[in-house]
Image 1 (cartoon, rainbow, N blue to C red):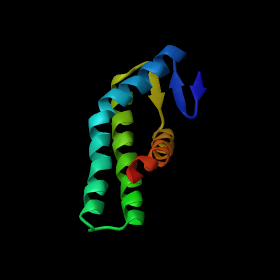
Image 2 (cartoon, helix red, strand yellow):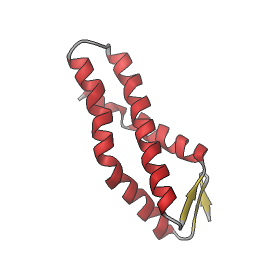
Image 3 (tube, rainbow, N blue to C red):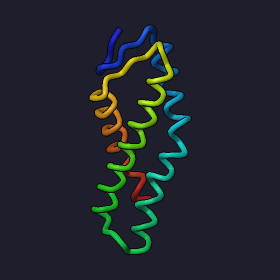
Image 4 (cartoon, rainbow, N blue to C red):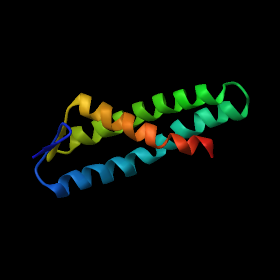
Length: 100
């Protein structure tokens, strides 16, 4: 079975994959969110630059986490392009957390 470039043996394996990605990636994503917020609060960057920086950092951190989980999980295989696209979409959707 395949979905968005992910090859998996069962629906259960893809659910486990994303659950592990969420758990393992949580500390890294906290850093990706806090770094632009700190720079913004210190007036070192503008809100526009903070959003761009957040999207870049969040995309990279999610890509790293997904690649790491993909490497160790045999029942799921993902292409680099699919990992990038999913990571970028997740970063864009969580950008509103930066405004809080």
